[in-house]
Length: 187
Image 1 (cartoon, rainbow, N blue to C red):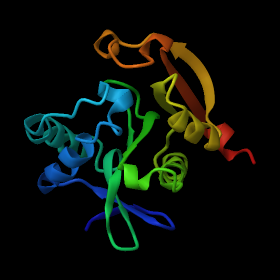
Image 2 (tube, rainbow, N blue to C red):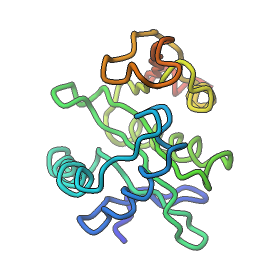
Image 3 (spheres, rainbow, N blue to C red):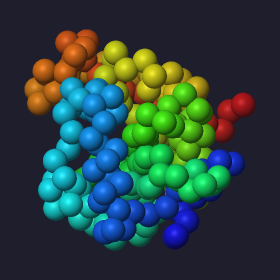
């Protein structure tokens, strides 16, 4: 396993072409997909033909430092989901998105905060990142709580994109949180 980052309880690694089944299983849980697709699973062929190639292309584009990373428990090696640290497709490399998608079995155990905190540290100390942002639906209190635990600040509320209009709570829009390197360095 090609380790990208380790925390006290997690190992983050690059995805490989053989990992499609992990993503298919994760995206097949309606609770996991609630605030993303309204609970509709991602079709397996979309994962195999579009998502996996895009993930692998991201490693090439950003030298393996940025992208989507598979997360496993150190104790036992179970796949718990993924974390993302990457710029927008045509965005500056010093402004990156932080995100996570975890299996239900991993919810409420502090993994999202632990993995995200480690990625913030790597972004600001090793990767030359100036600002990290994250976005979620306004009604996704679990994700918002994690962003606040990371000392990220709510900076904007934006309308929900039209392709997400049918999702419960979408009428409340989405929120964007940010943290700069200077804010992260303050105690």
